[in-house]
Image 1 (cartoon, rainbow over the protein chains, first blue to last red):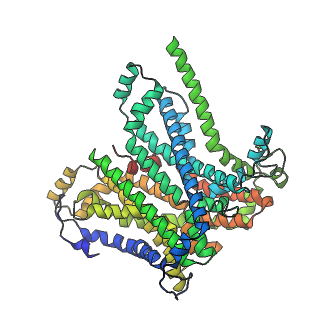
Image 2: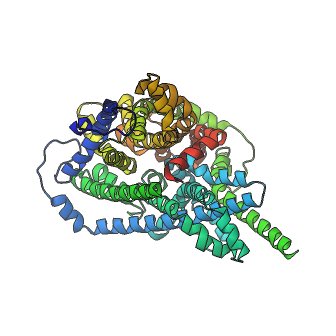
Image 3: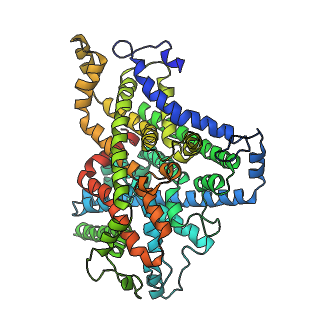
Length: 301
Length: 280
């Protein structure tokens, strides 16, 4: 970390006390940087967990790329992430717009709706999985299936049919992540210029047109930030799926992060698990980079 | 006249939307709450009953007496509080530096820190398990707290920085002329001025740590030491259809602290959530 002591130019007052960064750097080095580098190193070995014997090899990557299960897992992850993010954003936007509209019309209860829509934010992922497992109870005393049967449809195998289970997991994840979209987009809407909206209204633009042509374009940055954060949140999902389906039935809901865990602790294949983890790291870094760029663009403006 | 009519229509439409939103978000939680009061026959009643027959507390009594849930909640509580204190000690000076100085590599360092915020904790939990199991430090809360601190640092540094950014530089300059050191500026001016922002960020971090799962799941294997999330999944894996009401009661206990804090201090948490991500 000798770069911390390199020559510095202070725009503020006097010399920056760079030594203040040392404790933080030590913690990050120990807990983040070293383990991260180690995961990358381990992905090029054939080691097992807890073991010290290994050889360097690229067998893990080779075996991933020829493994049909890997592509199946990728497909599962992509479906899960894509639909989660789309619906989190749309639903979050719908709630944000309707709450904002209600506030402008002076409706009662907007604070209440806003609070309710944020409740999932404070519930641990594990609990969200448990809650939705109870909702998706397939027995006759299960709530959702009871209502669906009342409507004249057959019982839905929410968590026992591979394809339906993936939809169920996505629904639960939308329930979990919408709150974050909602609050970001709600704040984004508040920054849209009221003058322009009013001018458009005078010109006779409909509410829909104002949303599409004025509100949404001026919220570009917030929308982008929101999508990135949803992507990261969903790619990193582990806890909720763990308690909802455990990755099953079969491997139908085994998403990326869960796959890392299963490779290492289920199949005791540290090398292969680390290789999958490296893929997750790369995805995380790409998204961090995009996020950083968006924020910088926001600051320049 | 027409305008007024369409307004009423809009209002009714909005209320319908509000009702749908509320049902979607509240119903699952209320369903579990209702489970937590049910008796075994009620669990299996067809059609399912939304309301329990009575608000009997037997299920709660059972999980408090026969599971580690209270211990788990206590573990989470003290781990989260200690983590937060440690995080602030490390993050505040860094936030001050990033906010007040333009030094070389400052931007790159901030980007570096941001990356850590985005990286899934499972990635670091694996090698850490590898080392810790070799030196017999699994099942250790102190180590867990250190890892939690590392996980919280990015969010703390970057968010607190954005609060410190709003303090005018002129104040610092005046303080320096009066002979204040940077440490004094930070502790006597910046922290008191932005205390509500710092509290907001801390609350947000504590709420997210409350739900932290993957790190303790991998690094702990003693049920007495589990925090809430791991305790609950442990309970779930040992529970069956016939004990769902106990699991429900344990879940309600597990989410009660953060839910109450959220309902009471909503304003702070929401402001922290948005301050970091939305600028101008």
